[in-house]
Length: 610
Image 1 (spheres, rainbow, N blue to C red):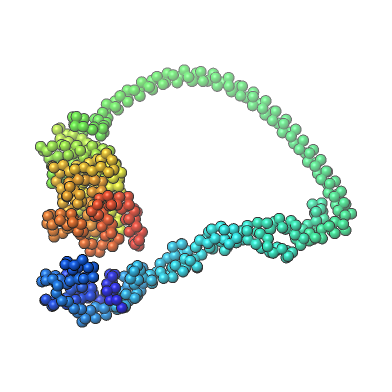
Image 2 (cartoon, helix red, strand yellow):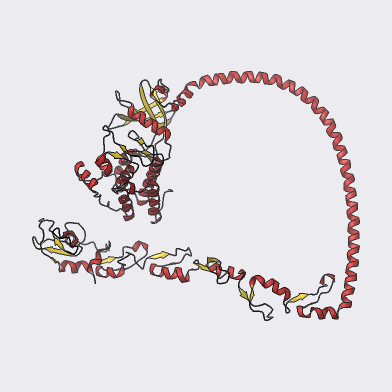
């Protein structure tokens, strides 16, 4: 048995191994424990094995001690620990999918397919939809030979459909199916489509007498019809005479009744029309007279009513003048349009809830009893950044972007009035609450991918995608904020150079930003991968334990953060796709949204409606 294959997969130990069986370097259960000669310590073979730096052979390796940092040391298999490890009891990693196998670790290589990583005993459902549940190893045979929902072709008419239909309903109506004559006349190769034509000619087909309509009730085989006519011609003539005499008599009676009925209807119709014409003539003269009188009366009433409505509308317009002026403040575009106060400060109640690291403050307020958030500059700050954000939010409207209700001024200050999100920033939400469940992680990631997909479609780079720039409302509703550093491109492939005044948050920056100070639409994809890592890590800052300089070296060299605790492998794969060094090989937000759908569909849990 190739013992190295035992550790190609992550196994769940029934009894967790003690620290005596944990590698001091990788902190995992020993992968083939090797004892180092220099200090007598034991490590995984993969942790101490390095390619020979002095030759270019792919088959020559040296051992290096992680504790002593000594090269080319001797190492031997620690057979005592190795024997103990491979005799530990494990369970199949596909237990959640129905496999109940347990056994010693050394038997695991025979249980799992080394090449594909699949377990043959996983319970799966037929992909054709027949509802059959069976082991994965039986699935191919079921799909090819036994599934009633598999596609097959009719051997007679070449119609393709499900097997249960072809061998069931279709078999009864297949036009090309060859059948025997139901009368056993000897014809045994009749196509089903031609059966009716055959029965018209079949000599053994039972038929009625040609004169059955006249009264002959005899039935016989078609071959005996001529003999029947010959033996009963006198009876048939008598039937025909009697039949046509009755028909003629009935037709005469029907015709007489019909003529009488039509004459009566015509007389009644003439009488009704004459009466209606007289009544309409009298009513018309009366109506003309009444309308003349009514028109004169309505003219006078309308004159009085219009004059009263004009006075009322004038008063209403004057009373709503200030409110309309406030709402029209949404139409401004430049500072010149924000020239005078447009808000009734007596209706505004507010208190500060956040002071930004730059020159802004966030206030929670109420206006006309509606909760709002107000973003304003600290006294003396330049309005350039908040004006940039206002211009961008005026043009961007999406359910996962924070909505700007309007811009306003009070005195010389510039304000942004935003919708209020009750749970604050995503960073504080993650740190102050229980860890998100899997379906909640997918729900948050899906919402932000949708919002960033909308920005990407509108050629907008946010440049500050982080958990502290996401707000959380009721039912974990997430929205992206802070567009003060956002830029809008002219085309999809355009790149912009970061201005000298832009302060970079290194741990969220893509390599092209740190190396060349250039941003593109795919720079936000890198930051989105960092955001997903933070969501799963409960709001922890990325690259924990590293200084900014160390983090920058990791980013530029392509070294990624390890998978967070309790993070699905499929989820971590999405992060790695976002962290590709070449920005144009990173996925679009549309494809990221689809990948999150795949994570959602691949696991069973009660889900929020995405």
